[in-house]
Length: 255
Ligand SMILES: Cc1cc2nc3c(=O)[nH]c(=O)nc-3n(C[C@H](O)[C@H](O)[C@H](O)COP(=O)(O)OP(=O)(O)OC[C@H]3O[C@@H](n4cnc5c(N)ncnc54)[C@H](O)[C@@H]3O)c2cc1C
Ligand SMILES: NC(=O)c1ccc[n+]([C@@H]2O[C@H](COP(=O)([O-])OP(=O)(O)OC[C@H]3O[C@@H](n4cnc5c(N)ncnc54)[C@H](OP(=O)(O)O)[C@@H]3O)[C@@H](O)[C@H]2O)c1
Figure 1 (cartoon, rainbow, N blue to C red):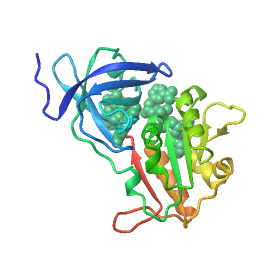
Figure 2 (figure 1 turned 180 degrees about the vertical axis):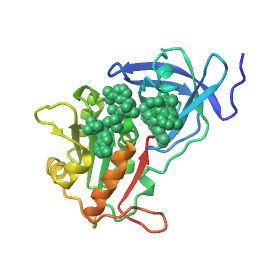
Figure 3 (figure 1 turned 30 degrees about the vertical axis):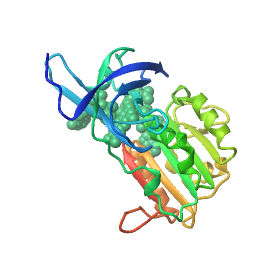
């Protein structure tokens, strides 16, 4: 029996949904302290030699709504160390959860002047935004919220039911803009976020403009998307947010 690192606690997989052969969600019952919507912790497993691998994963769940059930949306990288093993987890299996909660991609970081909230994601990075949107009270202050989800293929537009439920709950204030890059689907934008922002196609789809006066943008996922989109936002006149010097956009890279 190998020893468990001090910075993790044991959790149990209580539910699993497979969206594609690589993308899945697990629900983990675990006694981890409170977290804010948009934050992340670590998942960890030992290998047969007793060596531990820990990686960061954002919570899709809301601590307010399901305090002891953490939900994680994960894509398997076949060449990766941890995700092929996470992909083998079944209900009843143990997985270890980091005690330290991290991340600043939260609603309380957004300056007061922001009236419209843009949530830009690639792949599994839609997860933290779903957590944010589940806590409706916290985003009550925004006039409009635009959830942009860019994926390679149509079947990677995960959580269709929750998305529809949220759109319904927000009564016109939540706009959903899916984007598919590697196949053509009628009615869905084709391409990549930076170019579609520069051309105004995302704004047209949401029927909302991006302005230095009232827009706030979070970007999450592929680091190259984050870099390229930051350049586009600067071209639109927006500035990077720093706690010392408030701006209009902030981000979280997934690798
Ligand atoms: C803040 C944060 C939140 C995240 N949240 C999520 C989430 O909610 N869902 C999610 O699916 N992922 C998330 N991630 C990504 C996650 O942490 C892992 O990086 C990812 O799951 C891959 O882990 P792995 O152990 O399978 O792959 P790794 O073993 O880390 O390898 C990743 C890939 O990079 C290559 N690689 C590894 N090391 C190197 C190296 N030194 N040089 C060059 N190439 C290398 C490997 O060949 C492999 O293809 C998040 C990351 C961060 C930072
Ligand atoms: N999705 C899969 O089928 C798959 C399968 C196995 C492994 N993986 C691995 O898993 C990890 C995550 O994959 P993922 O598919 O979730 O994420 P991803 O590779 O980041 O792709 C998600 C979306 O981001 C877009 N994108 C990539 N670079 C961009 C940039 N510079 N600017 C703007 N948009 C950009 C992609 O467009 P493009 O299509 O134009 O690149 C795609 O629409 C990657 O390391 C990937 O190699 C993915």
